[in-house]
Amino acid sequence: MRAVVIASGDNPRLLSLNERYPAPLLPLVDRPFLQHILEHLVHHGVRQFDFVLSHLPQKVEDYFGDGTRWGASIRFHLASDPLRPYYRVPAICAGSAGPVLLVHADRLPKIDWSALPAEPGGPPLVYCLPPVRDGADGPRWTGWAWLPAASPDAWPPDLDEPALSDLLLRAAREGAARLVEVPHLLSLESCEDYLRSQEAVLRKQSAALLLASREVEPGIWLDRNVSLHPTARLDPPVYIGENCRIGRGVHLGPNTVISRDCVVDLHSRAVDTLVLPGSYIGESLELDHVIVDRNRLLNVRLGASVAVTDAFLLGSLAESAFRASFGSLVSRLLAVVLLLLAWPVLLVTALGVALFRRGPLLHRREAVRLPAPPEPGEWRTCHYLSFTSAGTPAHGWSSLFLELLPALPAIAGGKLRFVGVEPRTAEQIRALPEDWRDLYLRAKAGLITEAFVQFGANPSGEERYSSEIFYAATAGFRHDATLVLGYLRRILRGQ
Image (cartoon, rainbow, N blue to C red; front, side):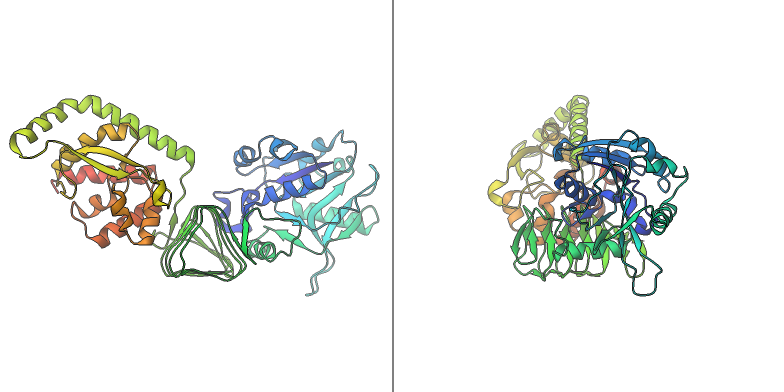
């Protein structure tokens, strides 16, 4: 069997969610919505897929590849207009031996797979929802239909979805197509539909979808590597994705999904809420009927989207593996270049320290390599050199000559970065408050820190905490570059 999947991916009713994701790749609980559709169709015997893409097509292609992971074959077709992609369907259907299943990638109806079109030339089967109770005139198309291979040839070239729906429903009224009523529909057509679909999956109202995570208690799913504070309260149904950290006093649920790689800080509450991957939820926030995408908050009841500029409230913890590897490579190469250029300065500095200061010339400092897992037994340590002992802060130019330059070999070796959170020993990390420690272990360690740039060489404990929380939520190449410039300004001024 063959399916043509309309995955144009641009939907204004999803507000700002389309900025980072094409709509079909938005996660429904534990995986992208389109993956749920693909696995559902493969389970029922569909093996050939044609995806019609428009908005952010490369992301869909990169995720699904050629389909062999699912035992299927996928071909991709590009439509120039995401609202009128149907002109590609006739050419795709041409030459098909049997009927073709037309699928919209933001909807998944519960259809009866035992009642499929038996004849290649039979009338279309149009899957519809029953009329709503408020007096809507007639059934509502779900976006799914079985079509004879030749039927799309008669479609006008400029069809949009409302026009296609009218065409199919009119054919049904005239007896040229058959309506099939479905009892249930999962949908991403709007933010409200998105949250309702999430609730339906969590409450197991959609038997077609199975969650891969472990159901530790009825209605409570936890994925791997979840850190859950003992005082956190979960009211089912709740799903928490992999690598998430749930802080002290947090209250989640009911009907709440925390996607992978998220942090929910202490005493926050989320009800009827979806938190998308890589998001940071600050302290003591009340989230109700909202969708959070990093620093963007979507109020589903009001249909409004707000970008939150305060990273202590909402922020991003996501850094792709490629960007992390690329950033590490750039840091190491830059350290090698600086080491080759600055070795005379390093020798002169060492000579000056030896002549004018008593005690050891170099101090070998120890630090835990970051990012690190939450279990102390799995931490790895590294060493770097400094002309100052631990706990002796350097001010102004001395921070450059006494701390940064001698640490260049460690940075070149990939043990540290130029910019990051303060390097600490295992004992120092264990002494941190639990919520601070969880965020710290997810960051990267560097010699140029947010705390130094903002507060100087002697920040208070509160200033260190706020700086590292802020850095963990905003870290990235642009922010690192801003901190390097701030560091240079500070030492040039002798601060």
